Length: 215
Image (cartoon, rainbow, N blue to C red; front, top):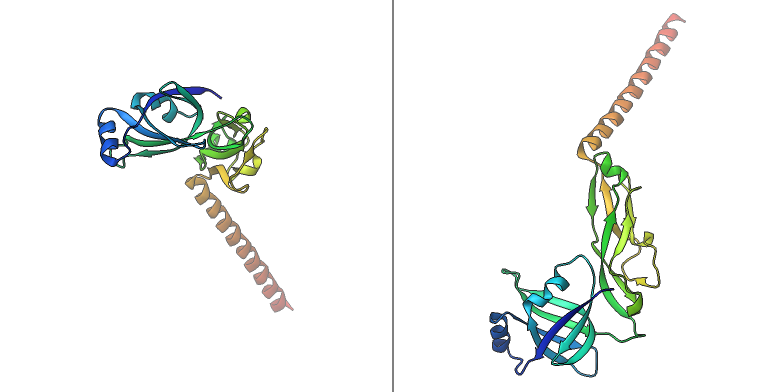
């Protein structure tokens, strides 16, 4: 997995006013936990671009005034209106110790159902993975070529390689919905089949009545 470097400086004060002033200066208030003590710092918002706005998972090397920490981004808070990054939590990881991360799911190929007019619904764009840091994938590729109408790829279908998926096994990741036009056609065909069967039954009944009258 690739590593992105974030360089920051320790925060002297931890109040809301200080955090607001940091954001006004283009800095993001952050914290590192998971080690012996929490480390509060701030870093330029521009350094978070490749970490936040990406379809890959990354490790983070956080450099706080010369001290380096191997981390993963554990949580991020955005402003509800401006979408500005308000705060970032980092979890420090250690070699040989399991970690959990949200890993993006990439769908590859063109499914049979989509090729025939169906709609692909990507329900889970990330899976929660537990593994040692050395085995953590950047993303998970799923081939949807054989996915047909009404079919789904579930969490249980994912092949794991030295990692564990914590999501519910029966949860759907991707589904191909039958197009509305075909759903309507299917219903009409079924109705026509029922009417045809009723017609045949009626004809048989009439033949039986004619035979009885003849006798």
